[in-house]
Image (cartoon, rainbow, N blue to C red):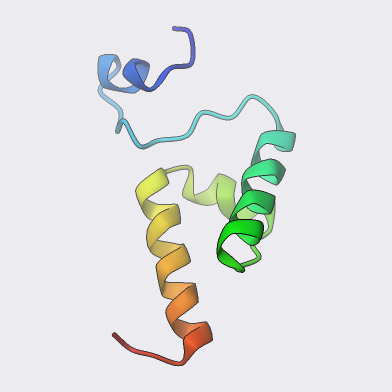
Length: 71
């Protein structure tokens, strides 16, 4: 395994799953989310989701709450 997205499919995992090698990676992802979407999450939240789809859904839900919409 070399840490690529294809490895998840080989081991039966979801290809959207994250693989973390350090807490710094989670911190960097959380910072990128804050910069790109204006939503601040603790790195622990990123680790808890550990899945691109789950994190994306969390971002969308947070943005909707910030805008006051239930769309």
